Image 1 (cartoon, rainbow, N blue to C red):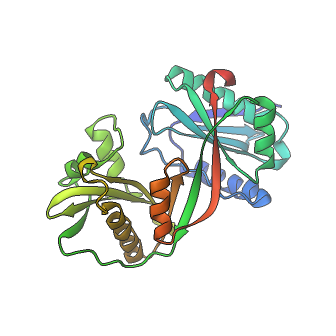
Image 2: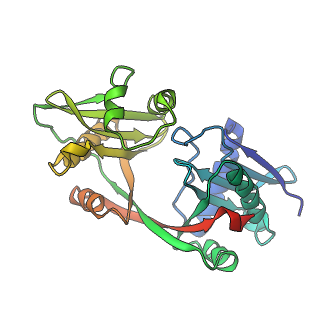
Image 3: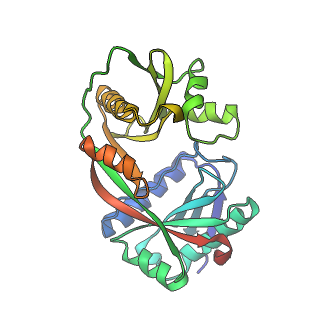
Length: 287
């Protein structure tokens, strides 16, 4: 096997097209649904190589992506062309990623695994029999709808003027103010602040490309001093309304370790479409 590996922190448009074409080929063959996320706005350091492309005879045959919202762990999504499997290509990409994570102080990988991915389960069992199950995430969807809000509630898009209000509520950790600004004002994301009587109480984001049919609801948070007062429901109502006004569907990922959020979304009619298990493996074990 002669595999040419490219590690990078950003992709060209032709590379994106190649990756999505390979993903469609692999996923259609195995009925997989957890599509790769190719954006880096929410990474703790956008200069860290997070995309690993494996080419054989100039053709893309394997791809590995790392989601790096914090320095604590890297979420791994990867796929290999059917005809190129059992040749060690994924292992080569994983080794390259492990070396980079070691340099940047990321201690663990979280392998995402769908239940129907027989090749993924077999690889994990063979190479990392001591992998520890971390948690399960549910992808949930529902049709958007307009939900009127009380008169004392207003929702505003984040701009340069409202960014400070958003950051006063958000639970995310940002490298600095400029990094937060770059992420929250990106073209593929709209961030919102919910005000109660003029005070910022909650925030949420709707992420997605202009060509996407569905928006991803994320970053939902209520100000710590105001929790338990029903503002989470108002945030979901506002998100559903914004998606409806945009003419888009809406989806979200919710952690199995967060029952209150899971119950909240279920109460609004969100239903799971698939689930992904996350398995923890030390970066050192992948070197």
